[in-house]
Image (cartoon, rainbow, N blue to C red; front, side, top):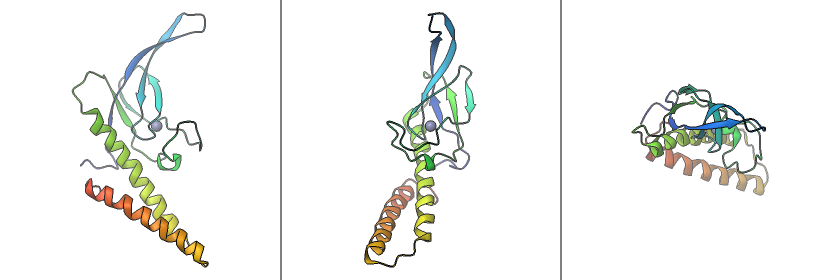
Length: 145
Ligand SMILES: [Zn+2]
């Protein structure tokens, strides 16, 4: 396992032509599926490292990852799609970063909870169970928490 604090997953960056509304060629860009937020991002055509374009907004359509968990990531490296890279594995590295961010966010939230009522205590217990489940996945993947 790479060091998730610094490892920048490689992503297959598909070259696309961009056109003006009048049909004239405007230039080229690269489209990727983000290993962090799972949405598509567009970048300039040059390959190499990029800061991620994950949007810090809640309830974006099709957004399955909590934006709070993609705020802090090492970015990614745009590569030609035909490079001999295990793209699936690179994607998983990104998802591990996000899952660890979630683990840390929920743990801090759990720490702050001070339940009084039976209902509040149940909520805290349920959160603990969720955190433990995430921890199990991360440990099995060899990620230090
Ligand atoms: Zn993203």
